[in-house]
Image 1 (cartoon, protein in one colour):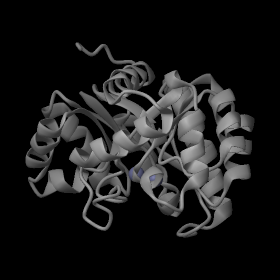
Image 2: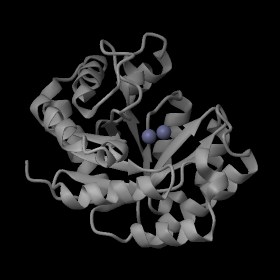
Image 3: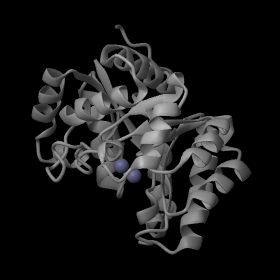
Image 4: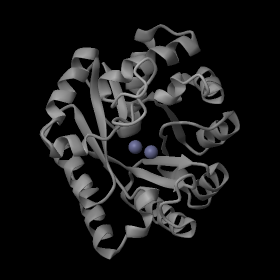
Length: 259
Ligand SMILES: [Zn+2]
Ligand SMILES: [Zn+2]
């Protein structure tokens, strides 16, 4: 079974759709999910609640760079409480997004640093979102000692130089539907080259549906298309990539999965 290391099922959970989405995924061979709760308190709570209810789902909570400006004492207090709940296996997604700039850059940096500090204090791996800010993302991971806990560069969309540095800092590389896009040659190059024990796969659903389903509302069942593409790039059997990436995810999140 594949492990979707990054999906946003919180809103589907709120609408009662999560169970149907999970069962379609299981039929497609995707059996494990890390549900990312970001975007404010309701989504954090939804993610944690879904993980508590469903044995194949784990949760991650954090303050997305888009929402950095909304972090206040109350939100931080709740985050600190939620991160201690059972089945919350990571802190994230957190990072820098200089493409959309939904929060001022200085605030994004400050909040990212604070999130790294919380992850270190609570011993949770960090799920990093980075867009149009490669140098500053790496700088902050290094200067704030993110290496102590390591984590995942989610939706990997940088180049090999970035990947090498991230691997050195203890971060695994998670590939989304982007790796199937024709234009994403640098990402494909990294997917082909990355060490086998540091590769993960994800959908980032409901965003970024892979080719040949590009443009649709993405869901974890579509992971198999992304994964098949990564296997092709690496010249690996799909079944080998499946067991390897699921093992990698279990190790990263500290889970003992029966295989
Ligand atoms: Zn993201
Ligand atoms: Zn995401």
